[in-house]
Amino acid sequence: MTIEQLLTRNLHEVFGEGDADRRRAVAEEIFAEDVVFHGPKGSTYRGREAIVEMAGVVRASHPTFAYTETAPAKANADSGMVAWVSGPPGEPPRYAGVDFILAREGKITAIYLFLDGEG
Image (tube, rainbow, N blue to C red):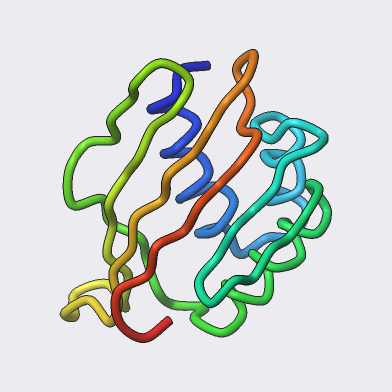
């Protein structure tokens, strides 16, 4: 799987997914077992299950929001980034962010989230 595909799947099929079983299944496919998520304000989640649970909490707090990339995902060696906005479809975005990842053997090993605005 390419870095760009990993970024897009993480955004839409993990953090944008409302169904916990589908979210977990995708995480099994795209996250390395030892994946680490570094979020705003120093939050850190280690392992697939911790990230899946946190993504579910985020999704539940904004159940109607959709993620839209503001530019195509970009890759450089074993890393990549994608900028995005989020909000209810058809309305102005409520917040924006950038996901930066590191990957190994076709799986995400680290996610760094940079948020701009409310989240």
